[in-house]
Length: 427
Image 1 (cartoon, rainbow, N blue to C red):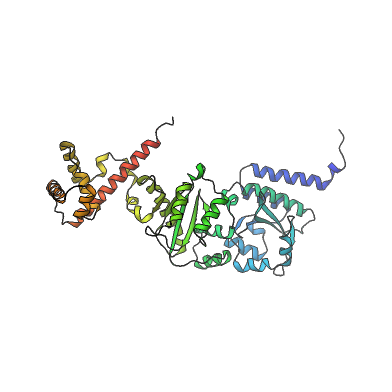
Image 2 (cartoon, rainbow, N blue to C red; image 1 turned 90 degrees about the horizontal axis):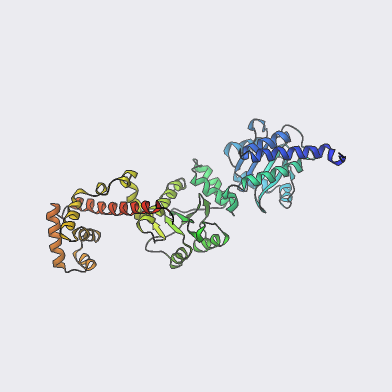
């Protein structure tokens, strides 16, 4: 078999060995860390991966990193605002950003030679891989080798929907870090906000947009992103755990829901959950969960409703899973069962009459109008109910307990019906 001299070149053999080793690390499924450790071993120097928000995503053995600036970045898990500002002023970085090839960075602060290659998902830059000349001098072929590593790292990072969907990585990474409760220090929060160019007031809401019914696919596309920017200008948002999560610094209440927002939700099929108000950013995770509950419980209580406020459903969060598994009488007030038993025996509607009365804050006129009966007829029914319950209507605590029981029973019935429906076999 004839073998050309070109195929036997040491640099070509090294390139093929390097590529094969990185690809093996990639298909092993061990993740970014395995790829980075493999690249560092083959390049004989430490390797660091950071995304476009300057968050440290992966790195090789930290004990081999003698560059004190990058050691500090790894310790913190991200690059500070001051560090980013200083790096962006370097001429070598400015020139390097204009090319798709690996480029060398020189810095007066540290003597280590540095080589950077961009990481892309498709054609979109999402980060960089850095080679530090801490252990050995960098070689001419390291530029091409690092570029190969960047390509494989891009494939691995592209598995993450966050990197595929994000547009403003500094902003979106900051929100994701808040939701993941990565920040414990207020100084870190301020630094990251400054780096992302964000400012927040004291009246914040978490808005959660459920995409599961959006065009039948839950897809996060450019049209949707632009539409949300129009509806909530200045409110940052990100794609997180299959939803769009927004930190809204402004007014949104049941009394002030813009007509164009209602129209957008109805046309798109998107469900929106709105948290209670808060002012401390570390509380984002708690209020994200509130918005998630608003969508989940709102979908049970009012299936056709596209917008639910947490304030309307927080009562139902007090229910345990045991309540939903009880037999029907188990979650009703025993005294209210007397009304149902009476209705069943006499074909009356005292149970519903009492609910409407409580719902209308015990207002006789409003209750009579809603039930389409005369006030005297209502008064007769209420007297009958009072005797059956053996409770005076002047007992406010009792009345509140009855009303809560009604609401819980209604929720449990709807939840059980939804569970039963979802468990039916598909036709």
